[in-house]
Length: 370
Image (cartoon, rainbow, N blue to C red; front, side):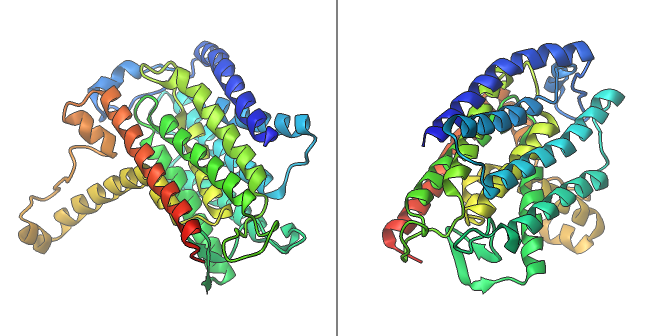
């Protein structure tokens, strides 16, 4: 437990103090955020705001975690190292995207195909290692499993290795892109991520206290290294907390793809290794809804242009748009909501989603449903 406190506290301090220096450094280097011309006009004032702030979050998390392990004299575990690999790996993909944006001074960085290839490589390496028998502990538990899970693995739904890998790829790329889509308003993605990582800190602490490694039974959790995962979750929570001081409206630094891809990947990693893959859909419900808004907008727009039957049934014009603009937070901007209002209300939605998710998680344990 001391490692959790040290990890969270140290990463908070590193992020809080380090972001201040990162703002100065990125400003001197001219690493200002380009703004898309077709976005809300209120965003044009952000042009030139230092970006790639997610690098501080990633660095603070990594340093905070390893410092906590050194202070407590504990060795890092395979699960925590895999999660850090996922965090750093996707952070590098995001950094390349951000760097191309600022160097070209254009709102497009890596091409979508190149970005997806980078995310896929990181996700596949993570999945192969997490499912590898080489990383089994003395009980035979691996960091990830080949089952579908909600709060525990569904034992009846064992997946072939290829399908399990595809599921891991889908969760990692899906959630990293979901957080990336949400990173459009000052403090939105950072604050929402903070709630989710705090939730996983609690989930991992509880799973450790009820681990099958301590006492086997119908209510125990078959999760490898839950306490060390809690250290990483606490470090991420602290890093987001410290960064939010500078990222809240009006943001003095922007998270960038460096941060959004890495934070989304970390959420996916926690879901996979804590056997709560489907529960993440609830806990991270805000990011799911924001992603769905984009999918709905694009799908309806294309179908309404291509299908006369669709237009006649739903009585819409060619190129119909469900929302004024996507992702979803931009729709509310176009309706006249202030950015701060949108961010705070989306934080509230995330808090409610996290509360519901944790409530379901605990209720399942109380009910003793295996």
